[in-house]
Image (spheres, rainbow, N blue to C red):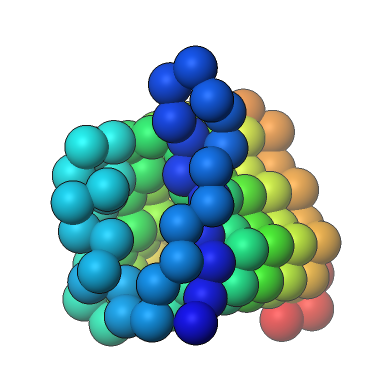
Length: 116
């Protein structure tokens, strides 16, 4: 069983338990969150409303994606990564453990930050 945090109006970050990511389909739809095929989310991740994860993305544990973040296909984020509001990562980006990007950052295809 894994835990993910989603933002709930008037409550802030609320935890949701799941075994298979498809169990969260309705919760994602309510928040405009899109998760591509075969994505893997680490335990205790926080996904802001309107986030879009491309196909085959992988998020480590304790990652936090701000409102409106977009990840291209095959992006990989290490444990504890944080992306500010509106960040965009191109195809195949890799961020090592603990990377932090501010609001509205944009990275092109195949960017690598830190050790992954």
